[in-house]
Amino acid sequence: MTGALQLEPAAAAGFACTPRYEDGQLSVAFDGTGDVAAIKTLAEYLKRLHAEALRLGVAEVRCDFRKLSFMNSSCFKSFVVWIDNAVTLGLRCPPRLRRRPFIAGVGALAATTTSR
Image 1: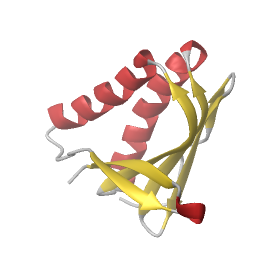
Image 2: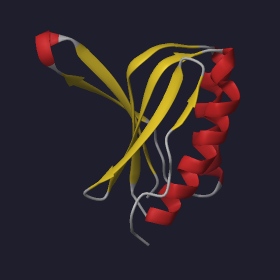
Image 3: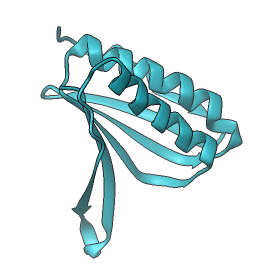
């Protein structure tokens, strides 16, 4: 199934998740500090992101961490749980890190999970 994005951005103190769906590609940008104030917001957001990816029928979800300045272990665990849940559901989702060069030779990493 496809259609318009039905996932809203989410925010906590100093932290934000902003989704984007364009040309059949679902991505989400993370911004700020993934600390104790962001744990609940992030964990709940990743559940909604997963449901939206299934609804849209996308093959992968791209995560942009370039504007994320810090992530504690609890927030990192939310990503591990998200990927593990996808694997448990039988979705093929090997996480990959992609290095993408941009202005001034500074590199960025983007994590991708593939659901097919």
